[in-house]
Length: 440
Image 1 (cartoon, one colour):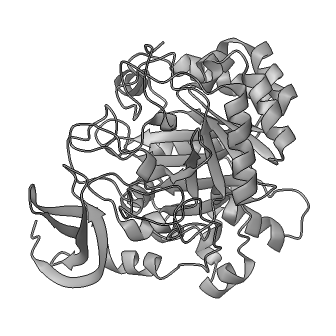
Image 2 (cartoon, helix red, strand yellow; image 1 turned 180 degrees about the horizontal axis):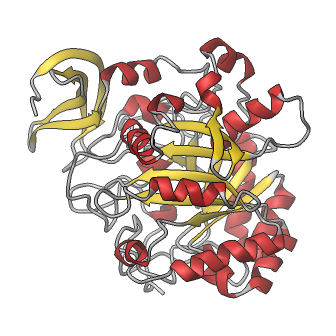
């Protein structure tokens, strides 16, 4: 591959992938019309990092930014500079539309691809601390937001129903549980207690439809347990969004089958979230050429025999346009088509609702066009391209809409919160707390 420079697309800032020093970076198109990032650290040398496969599509995505909705800063200034002064600082350009709260850093499984850590971990936040975190989100980000309860594995907390109840009482319109599904798969009564407390949907870690995939990505075969978790949610009337960590050579060939599975189970599956692997915690991607939004869209186009096209994936207006690619499949089973294929840019800008959850943007537009009070049946697909120390573009960080709220109530953009240097050391400790204890 010829990586010779062809044309500069933009100048930005990034970090050294070894020491995380903030350094200038240039986004450029090479002779093969691919997009790369060039950056240089005085101590660790020169880095040319692959970003996207198609420069023209990259430029189109970049130009699809929507007007930002500002947020009251939580820090008075940015002394060290982005990404080392998150809080959020006055330089952050967008409001947070999906806050996350980690209720534990313990887990009941040890996944080889986890961006958490091994060994010593912090103590769980207390109910009082969680209540303060919820109230801080409400104060800075407003009412009627969805919130995601995450971890670690939240279901290992015996008081999780109480936590969900407090979140709903605080004023969040929806409470989503990010889980590996093992507990809710074997204990439907526990799942029912979460629903009674106010749980609105489950964000289920689900990486493929073969035991081989789950063994490689989760350390053991947990497929049957995850399928049972979906069935239990079906019985309890709890919508499920499948969250897929995509790793080259392991499950990147299963995207077509996953879409078929979702389309055959629309009575319980309300979305498919595809997350290309990034470097953080104890997970290291051997090949630094990460999968981008456009790469995943190309895989889907190939595996759907062209039924879904690369151009069917559009940016999501609630965040920086390069962070997500999304479409909405109208129909069910094998009888479907991509709604975005018929969408015009001006129509998208006119109909976009900034209050729509990022994965439901196009479904909400379809429902609005149908003048229906009920959601139109179909499948939202969201490709979520998280950044790491290699691909970090600080322009994108400032436009982030997804943040983790820590113990003191401050919020940190997701990609920055999970940022680690070449040795795996985090910039921001989990929950803003020092570690102690052992992993469950």
